[in-house]
Length: 266
Image (cartoon, rainbow, N blue to C red; front, top):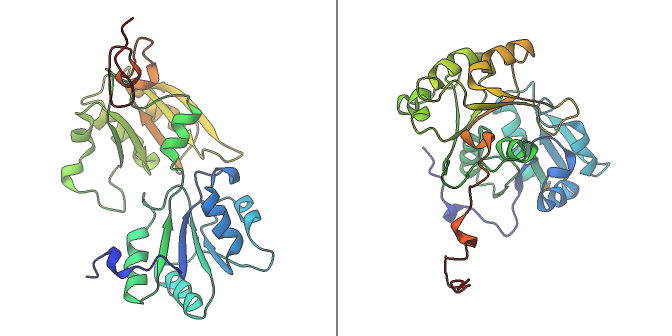
């Protein structure tokens, strides 16, 4: 198996740029990502996950290829063919490429084909959700850990990452790709979280038909079923959603000194 190593990747003149598009809103792509998109000769994107409005950043003469109906072996070979023909290629992925984006499979293939590439990060749905909910997911004295995970589906989840075991941490848990299995996920989460734990159901964040519903963990499956949602849902389960008015970071406390500030004498 090809090992991913920065020693084999040239960042000077990448032939392929794998760009995170963000959660959906066209203006949530990074400046670097938008610049690369505007320079591309060819753009591969998944139309079911990246809105067409994002393509407004592309050149009018750019070749646009929607990969939603293609298998991996088809579109990744097309990427390599165009890159080796001297084309500037962008693979535009929803959210951030490093999360549930088949990034590993593409990078291994590009390395095997000796095609240089660059990965440009994007805003992930969990970050967009926290912003939309106006919530910090790491509140002092309340919760300091964020878990990003998914339930068992067509893609296997290792046994050591069983959802019930992850729930034992009672951290801010962000659950991707799990709407089809929300009742099972809810039951596993309730093994450790209380039924009253705040839960946010976030559908297609940043898209025109975005939906955000806040309730309790005990309502998770019912709210999903009532909204008739089966895909593109992110669940955020966290005590942070309830807020904590007295929570405060030590970093800016007057009785905390560090190399940039002396301890206050007040």
